[in-house]
Length: 337
Image 1 (cartoon, rainbow, N blue to C red):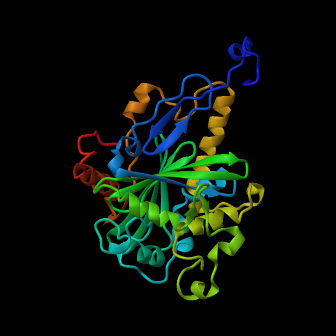
Image 2 (cartoon, rainbow, N blue to C red):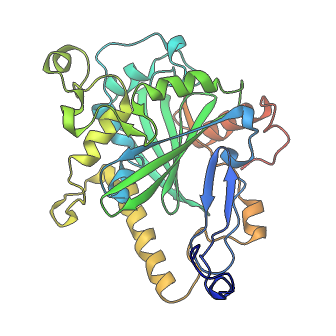
Image 3 (tube, rainbow, N blue to C red):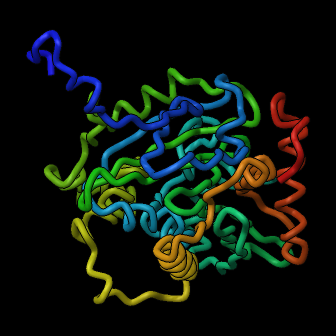
């Protein structure tokens, strides 16, 4: 094109295609489909002020679907992320499964280690699935962890009593993907510098490739596995998850898998995905392709990690979320999800 004659009309006849792009909480979202893009739901991660969000990403060298599925499996944390010794929860900022659960002083490391078989319940929601992992601790007391599948390729989980993670898995190609995460704080503003420095210890710029990976055996240390961690792969759970999903192969052969009772969320999600594919093939509007009115009504989702009464656990997680929002400088005036 630059070398065309001055009077060439080619520039009026040929166009490069453009795509609508919007920024939300430090991430650029592009719509690559036909027609007008769907509206963004008013999820916490999109409506919180910049001071209370932090975004990061990382490369995973396998198909996006198997990378996503580890995030909606609540049972794996008791094993893959098991630490044999507890850390001081006050030093847990920005680290998952390190802080104490809400309404308790029990470190998550101890809870996952000593109560390893959760009961898993599901609810269908307007955004996908709400997932409950219930660990009965003692008579009348239960640990309740509420996580969410945001259809089609994201989840929202608790990081601590005041912070959540919303994470998307976006294909680069069939055999690799990036995860993009927004950390959202209901309490104090996010310490972006500390969060960034923590993650740059594991991921290198500019391509966000993990420093600990398949080429160096994910940092595996047999001595550590005997006395420190279940996996022997250090204390960053991102490394554990990366190994778990990449070790299945770049595209997992699902004809050879055996799903168990704790895979309920994965089974339910795959059914949603197959249904959406069929709907799209018929020209119908699948789940989470939202118009403006639908997007404005969508809130949350609620992600809670706390210890409450066994018989009233459904009331407990809602009340826990209500208290957290009422104390928040940005969420207090918003309708409850």
